[in-house]
Image (cartoon, one colour):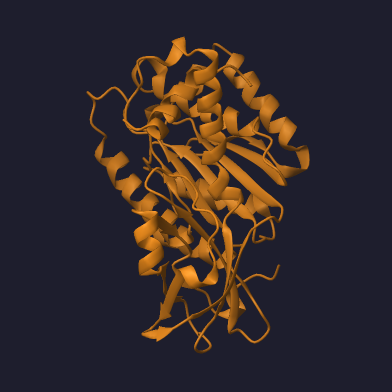
Length: 326
């Protein structure tokens, strides 16, 4: 198991410590793009010459590349359906700890909101209440030894993503929905394709920490596997990323101070793709009258240097009339 995989399971034991914008001529766009290497670390120092792009067989010009330093909003969706309890509550402990760690991370220029959900929204902390309210409520949940009785029922994951969009109100380019779940969905009325279209039209990226069974003995249910596959498709389409721990680490509760600090720093780095993507300005070869897929990749030379880099970007360009203004 890599260090990045280990830190995602180990932090359960730590102490409390719009994707598009276009110009008026509909040819010039700004798109958020994240590049990570094989270890999941952000690739820094990229320039316009490091990218290649195309649209329906025609080249797309890369005009500029800059790091995004604008304000961001993140809606955390925390799954408390029955499948999230796991063996001896392990999955729930990890899910809660991941949400709480993010709430206490003090990401610069970042506001948080929270939706706790099963088939319906169980708890809601909106942006008007502030990030401190998100942190405080998650702390209370973690200290409540009886809260595990709330981990029950079925899951409406994709419906809750739509509720997260509503919580954002008018979307902006810095908006992200971050769902902590095992991927199962057995109650949503909205289809994955409908949710994908809603996110793309709003320009909101979807990220997820996907928690499968963690003890190595119980396979995922068909609902979890099917839901996870659909979730990954939506994540990829919107330019988000997925984080997935594979197995539990046996050393979790006995970390020394240096190891705790190293894991905490790793987790902080893990949030970077959500709040510090590149902003890539492009010029299209023509005006798009319907949602159109396009390709963006690293140049062959840069891709060879990065070695196994992953490029996350919104896979479709929306017509001008569908894209919200800044």
